[in-house]
Length: 426
Image (cartoon, rainbow, N blue to C red):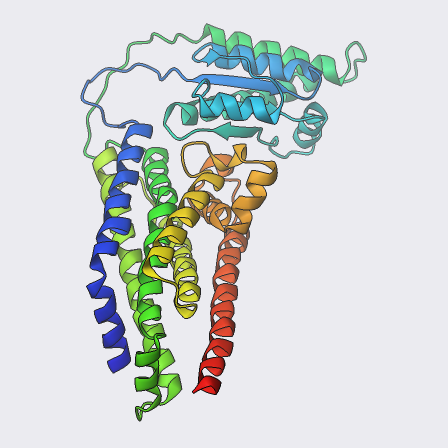
């Protein structure tokens, strides 16, 4: 208990780092969130559909006219832009804000679509690369509506053409696509809408988006603050004078370890609670209510964040065991925090656009696994529309936990030879 209190006292003496790295940086991330996600309960009682810039990349060679039909369908309410089919062009388009969303029709999609529909299954969702914000979520809804209407129309066309060999499978899909696009054009987009203000002004997707993105943007302040604070706490107990004093004390060595562990766990719990309350508060402010959130996704996402906090603690533990200086701890914390924030895709690019070596670095730094766990829990990004699963969330969260446990083991390993060497000198 005395060790735990002493460790917490050390953390209290370094509260400036907590105020800067955790509180100040989290407020900066919140400001970015406010700018990137539009307010869903705007002050004007009028309706005007969001106009987002979207691109459609066809890798199926125009089979069935699905890609062309999707462009026409999205073009009715969105601005369709051209993006070349290569990784560099897509990254440039997203980084320069030239497009809000890129939808990819993969090779063989028409055959996969017809096989799924014929077997009574829902068609596979298209791959999407998105930025943070509201318009692209509406375009995702339109893509889902297009595929759903295409499925229904295709079944009707197939039934009408039963027993006829005049057109093949591709022809039926072409005919269904034309009918879906024609039906979309016949819908009036200037219909008179009456806006009724209610207490629950937000929708589920909006509240979910804000809460999930708040936790995602927290990847930088969380890991940076934990590295610095825990490195300072553990480091205070590794200096020679303090270590010798503990060695001659009647307290067993395992009690010292348990006390430090309890202090680190207490700090981690406080950080988790802080960021949870911050995210809930931001969600309430931006959407007008927390009614759009459901308990299960929030609990899963919070659990992922707690494990990620543990990951930051484990890095600080390693640095503390190595007795690095305050300057070195600050420098390493900032470099790792910035690298994790960028390579994970947390900063407006979206994790799907981070491919190749950048994606590999993001996974090795653990940030990409954390964002994937948040997206799976909240049903965001490529998991929008209910394609996520508890097993997928558990696998991504488990990877974060494995990284944290491995780092703790490294810290224990590097500390033991160091202590043994100092004992032999004395």
